[in-house]
Image 1 (tube, chains in turn brown, orange):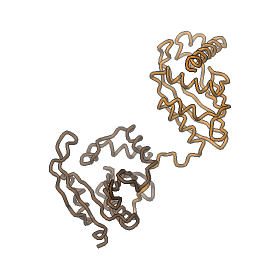
Image 2 (tube, one colour):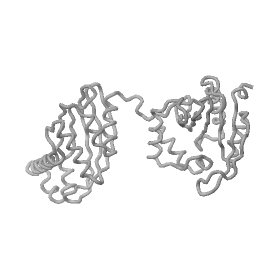
Image 3 (cartoon, chains in turn brown, purple):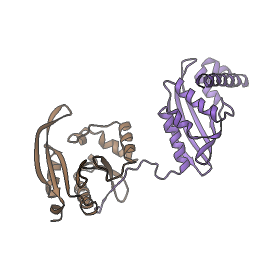
Image 4 (tube, helix red, strand yellow):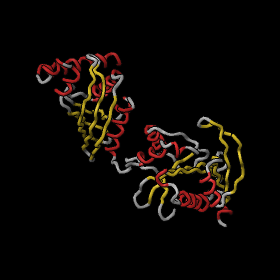
Length: 164
Length: 172
């Protein structure tokens, strides 16, 4: 199976997209999305860039993560992560997030990283807390998506907090 | 990154393609997207095209042929695979699904393409397909009865070339 096949497999699963800011995707939409990422380079203000998450040994795609640098200050980053339903609850998300934060703080000299998470997404909330993220905001029914109003939390971590 | 996982760019399957494979990929992707200008851009100025219907089309003619085919083939769908290429030669397989306008018959044409390249452009392009199989589908009973004959093949070739010449005059 190609990256596209794996990507479509989990991005078309309503259970995977339930708490995400995107809806289920057709294979054509997945192909366009992957293609759209090919020319993007990390570092551009205000632009989401998506990376593949793959097993080191086999290169098999098991998820994807996204980073956006703030439009007005590229020392501020927002991140997001999706893991395939086949590979959830194996600690991969924590491994990815740790690696991502190390890279952003140590290599890219990002000062602060935020993540917005659905208030009902307990697994992600627990993950962020376990990584020392601080809950900063609770936006009550701030987004109408997938047919209903949803609430979100904002979590954030500073470089000095990651170094603790 | 951790012990088990890496973060990397998505693999599109084109990472290991050489320049001429990418050229063929571009040609058929443009075809799928009905982007005849993108297809035309793949040909060299001295390009020559051949198939069972069109013979020895020059660069202008083959470019016009794809434009005519795309503009007239409203329900045309193209699938392609098996792209191979060296520095000088290449091959690919493509299938065309469309309605033959003159009879309204649905046609699936399975085609093996061969290419030669110079300076990153196609200089010769030959599409190989079974004319009789195509004639049976597109012309119906007439094709079934006469599709194998030299007369029918010549007739189809002449009509196609006339259509191309008219199209080129109109779009000049």
